Image (cartoon, rainbow, N blue to C red):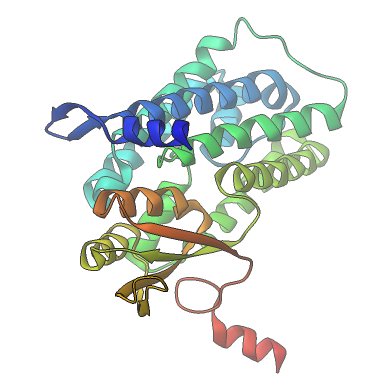
Amino acid sequence: MGQLHTLRRFGRRVFLHTRWGDVTGRTFHDLALIAIGCLCMALSVNIFLNPNDVVPGGFTALAIFANRLWGWPVGTTLLVLNLPFLLIGMRVLGPAFGPKTILAVVLSSLAIDALHPVLPVVRGEPLLYTLYGGLLYGLGMGLIFRANATTGGTEIPAKLLEHFRGTRMSSSLLAMDVAVLALAAFFFGLAPALYALIAAWVMARVIDFVEEGFAAAATAFIITSAPDAVCQAIIEELERGVTILRGEGGYTGAERIVLMTTVGRRQLVALRQAVSDADPDAFMVINPSHEVLGEGFKPLTRVRRADG
């Protein structure tokens, strides 16, 4: 408990004030996660995936296709593909695509090209390079998500489509992943495309585990003395609804405000940070929710029609 308290104090400590925000201990923690995550992704691409024509999906897959067609470096091509979407995302969506996401995109791209000449490659055993490639790539992405950043790629155009056209991100990402797998089958053959599907499944499972376990979503109960600030932070920063409950302290008998909210698995880190910033003394309980029905999640009406 003492070590945990020390880590929390270090995370809140402000080392520098800048025009973009305060540099705190949490900033250094996030930077370390991003650096390790980018290294894992670069190792996965160079050692396991790229040498065996197994694409990890998204813009990295497009960069590998460009490498095969024209000999372009994978990392540089990945950076060039991400750059216009990063600029548009920052302009349209604001802080969601901030400095940490730019850092993750640049670091991962540079690491792929810088490490390519010096790393060994694993070939010959499909199960070996598919599983380990997916594991390392998923670990890298999970660590970057833990730092409340993204790896760019297809998530950015998917968010832009959601913003401008109202298209659900899950539908856009699924369509883009299917298109990438179809291209992989065309370029490399059916077998590498099927291995890519296995790698994608492994990546998804590892990302879930790194972030918060295997729950599809999570429900948080927050006891706070600053309910307005916490509620506003959740609504504005996470775009999730909040239910206000009224409770009573079992020992003191004092009235307590309890906030309840449900978020997607990739928003847990952002939720913890938002609550901590709004009320560092808040008490929060997070429960895994393996199925969530209603607005922002799986449509309730669709489930009823299927059951009926």
